[in-house]
Image (cartoon, rainbow, N blue to C red; front, side, top):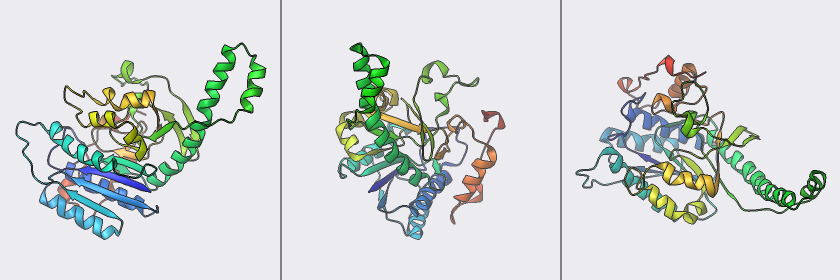
Length: 318
């Protein structure tokens, strides 16, 4: 079973230069998930709303009811947030989300996605197909690579090594995950001001749904099996404190998992459009494509004054 989890909030935002209105963005992103669910079986959508406006909550309920999909909404109650900035306030719903995940069956899939990700049609179906393909591929490639290196270390010739590896069928259970965004900072290009930090070596793999590459960094949107969250609970618990001195940022928590314990893949042709700030848009985005996806996910409750997209052609990379 696939469990989709989204945290919504239209009041507080840690981004001050969003390209779209936060309220409208969250509604359209939820709608894009609901439309994707039409092509899936055995899927459930769990939304955690953190004290959004009355307009947003009412619109959210209506969109979900009209979709006829399996959806539950957890409307969080007011709490004392005095002295907390927007980022710290947002971490409360992260804890609620992970407490929910820790109680799911081990073999179920979990896709936790932020409320500013617009999904392309069939994005979720493609992610599931890709996960199955990569899981089988990685679980055979990894032990073969290790066996090959062992033979080389023992002085076995290249020819004999190839023959032995060809007959080697041992399988491992390496965990994998999928990050649906094409994170532009991971690629070398002239406008990348973080070139020396993010860009590094990776493995590129052709799959039935397109090319994917390994990545050491992701935002907090990814698909894993529930057992992976439980196995690495200490790290995900620390992630809940991101932005505080105790936890630092994603690079101090989940990136350590992707580097050492979980093989995380991201598509070169993204499954989502991250509607946050311009630097989070896909590597090859074009204004007409973005606007088409934005318009496709308009709802009956969209307000014209909230539907404006602030695009700067100078932000187009290719």
